[in-house]
Amino acid sequence: MIKRLFLVSLLAGCAAEPPDAPSRDFLPPDATAEQRVLVGEYVLDGDTVSVLEDHGGLRLLDWRGATVLAFSPGGSNPSVRPVYGEDGGVRAIRVDSVEYARLTLGAADGGTFRITPIRPAEELRAEALAATPPAEDGDFRPSDLVELVALDPGIHLDIRYASTDNFMG
Image (tube, rainbow, N blue to C red; front, top):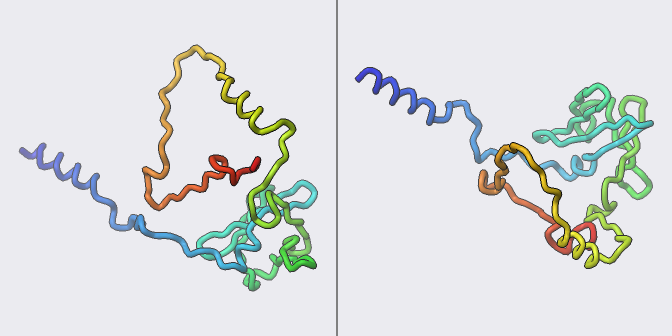
């Protein structure tokens, strides 16, 4: 009887969430418009830094030494400043006296990046559909892929490659 009570209490303790567990309904605040324009990648002589939004603030991640600095666009950390171009957009970020130029990773207007294929898309599609992966022999683990939206209804997908709003149009 004591073993059963112990087992029941053990299982009950495992099933309950700890009291300090974060709420599943918690969402961090959206980045402000002033913050969003700064988020991105910046480079100087091959050294890259990233500006990331983090719980309502901004962080500067220096990939050389993984140094993280917190700052705000208004200037709570005077050693990190945006540098604006003639068009009013952020063209660089200045850390102390070092200026990192903004990398353009995609379409400048924020739209979908596009390429012009060398061969017609229908020809490429027909070739891809006719191809088969190489046969492999061996003792492989079973697939453990998970459908993300089944894990949390708050996950929203933007699968541009599955529509005409993709890099090939």
